[in-house]
Length: 123
Image (cartoon, rainbow, N blue to C red):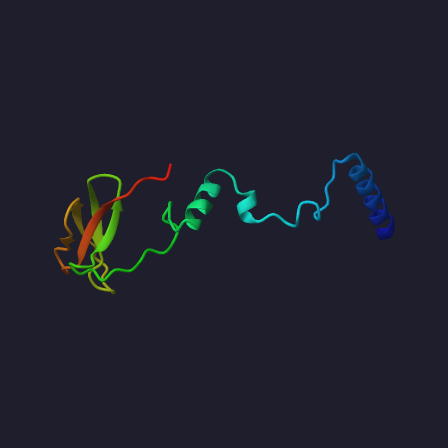
């Protein structure tokens, strides 16, 4: 039974290949990669990642020391952003403050520095 099904499938494939409808994987040079199949926003994201950019903030953010010389970077599309700081590792209370464009600003509770950086949207 299984052998007959296999023979029918092979015969149908041969008929289709003679007409040019079916192509073998050998003529297409194997299985296409993700980059070859991607379209739309996925293609944009893959091309940007090849260039070393992170258009949709998909990657883990770089860690910063939080000092005046190396502040935490906060991306923003406007001129100010509300920031929440967990001052201690086990703290359950979040200290909220407004971060404005310009120089690095300090958290009012722990003193960590944050800097607002203008971020362009990818689309």
